[in-house]
Image 1 (cartoon, rainbow, N blue to C red):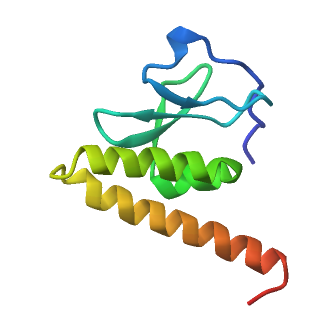
Image 2 (tube, rainbow, N blue to C red):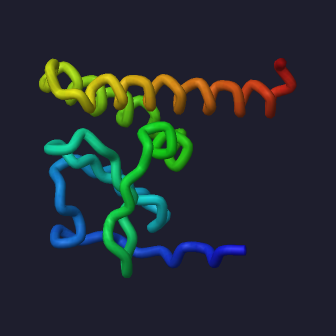
Image 3 (tube, rainbow, N blue to C red):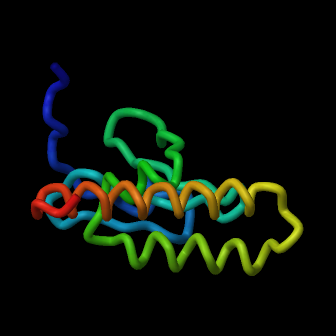
Length: 109
């Protein structure tokens, strides 16, 4: 079993990219690397962890709108970048997983 994450608030030196979703509870912070087109989980005592965009959605389902919006803007701004296809597939898979999870929780099949 893993230990729960200790709450912390990242400062300017802890966020190496321009887009970040900082959780007010002090955990599950998320950032987006605009050069690579990848989401990263931010940790207090570890380097940022690269995430599949679907994992980013599952990490922060309440911010699915911001995650999708940021990814789609990146894809539009990088139309020939090979990462765009993978990123769009990851977003679709993550959104599907969240919808299916909450539908199952609600008793829908």
